[in-house]
Amino acid sequence: MQINSASQSIYSGESSQTRYTQRTQTDGGFADVMAMAQSENNQGTAPTRSQLAMDTNQGHLDVDLDSYLNPTPQAGPINLDDIPLLLPTAHNVDTLSKYSEEKFRDLLEQYNIPEPPANIEFDGEGKLMLPPDYPYANELKQAFADHPGVENALRTTTALASHYAGIMESAAFRDEMMTARNQADQDRIIQKYSHLFDDNRPGAQIVLSFLEDGSMLVGNKNA
Image (cartoon, rainbow, N blue to C red; front, top):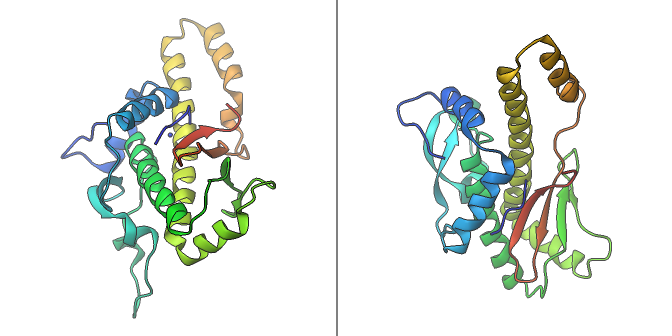
């Protein structure tokens, strides 16, 4: 997997909210984290198991992503509080991106699809969007229909990356405000980041781009 200007240590014994806050304050930036992930991938660290350590609202847990992203119907009522929610942290974006890339590559091979699309996006309702000129669109859509967990992995990757991009931008605003020397500096910084205060502002539009060998890059389309 390669990650391009779009997505670590975990602090044991702390609440998920504390880790979440510390990640937003200590990460160097979205692009920096993604560049680190690319370097790790070049060293052959892509995960090969579905049981992976993830940051959740219930703490740092080992999550079976195969089951998590492709749940099976269960008899009886389900307590949603028992289901851990994946947090938009750098670690989760990195880990889920590697997992999604591996699953997507396997799917292309399984269905004899000779090349991936140039990119994949999901609209505001989570609907798959493929390039209009992609010649294997029907085959890929059928493969996703047969294996919804793979499409869901890609969709979840873009969702977490979008939220994480917003967190990093907010962190940059806080960092600059902490260095403001006077009211004029504060006013300038507030003006620079005025879009952050718009309740209707859209999230970062994440695009998944693919090389010919199936390697995946996660990026902010508007960056």
